[in-house]
Amino acid sequence: MPLPPYLTRTALALGLLASSTVGLSEAQLGSNADLSTAPRVTIDRPKPTFMLRERDPRIHGLQPFQDLVDAAVPGSVLKPAPGVYAGPVEINKPLTIEGGGQVTIDAGDRGTVMALNASNSVIRGLHLTGSGSSHDTDDSCLDVRGHHNLIEDVVADNCLFGIDLKQVDHSTVRRSKIRSKDLELGVRGDGLRLWYSNDNVIESNEIIDSRDMVAWYSNNNVFRHNLGRRSRYSLHFMFAKDNIVDGNQFYDNAVGVYFMYTEGGAAINNVISHATGATGMGIGFKEASGTLIGNNEIIYCGIGIGSDLSPFQPDSTIEIRDNRLAYNGIAILFNSETGGNNVKNNVFEGNLTQVSYGGRSENPTRNFWQGNYWDDYQGFDRDGDGIGDTPHALYAYADQIW
Image 1 (cartoon, rainbow, N blue to C red):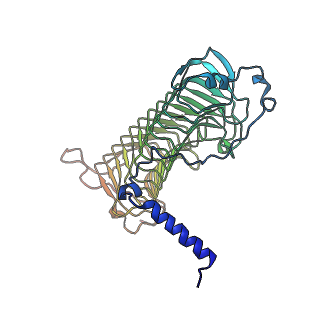
Image 2 (image 1 turned 90 degrees about the vertical axis):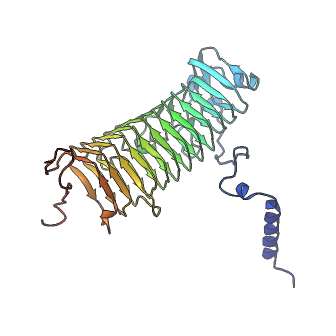
Image 3 (image 1 turned 180 degrees about the horizontal axis):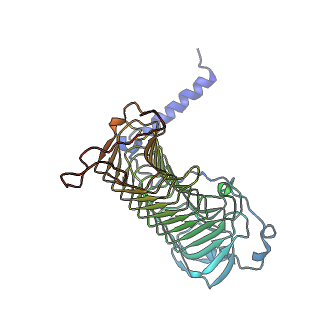
């Protein structure tokens, strides 16, 4: 009896799949497979083409920067004459573009200003401005899509999104200054975004008056010595592993650093200040595991450290040590707390509430507390060893009558 058509198609598809995997090793088929040389998956929505007459008149008489790129030899160094050029620009071959801080590319408030699709390229010393305002097409100052690229000393302003890295590995964004369009906070674009991008370095950048700096599905990236001001999330990780946040300064944002559905990673040596308001939080966790929070100064925030169902993975921990948590509304807030937090050698100073449980804990003793300084400690140190003779006890008077 012949198979129904839908079963015939299914059998054929399974046969093709089986034949395509013959001879591949387990590593090639598993999570350790090297995808750096694999073709890129097209994930961008098609970006519309705008005629010159649709762009702001300020760029109508300018030389198109695309002409200079098209004339450049692959692998060469392009040093344009100082001045203002018209965008947009698309780069599909390896180039080094040196602007020297005197070259502006303006897209006239339509579309994306520059798209770097090539690998092994350098974009340095350019001023990129005037993107469109469409979230559907992610209008940005700079789209980066190749690997092993260096983005350095770029000024990106009056753009919806700033610098957007998608499926980008082993690249560096350094000493760049990024601002969004003058819009309400929630409708700005992200100042800097990593999406499925691994092993990149983001260092010494300024991201001010943007929405978020985000890393989604992106692993083993380093964020160091960056300045973030007046945005929503200074840095937001989602489904991201083993990212390092080192030596940054985050001021006046709604949230400093947030680890959501992440594993591993560390936030060390950072200053996070004035994350205030109803959602104000210095460092936050949501179902995260295996993270180190060390040697940070978290001051004047609504909540210093907020934890929700973290650590999430069984037998994992979150290490909170050697931090200064000072003048916060709540220094540490645990929601839906399950234990596994090791809190050691921190300074708790001037907080309205030192530690609070927002959700009921079945076993709060599973957290480990040692060597912390509490400015409201009421006990004595009769042997003079610098450690209180009795443990510090915190009472939540609103929860029950003592």
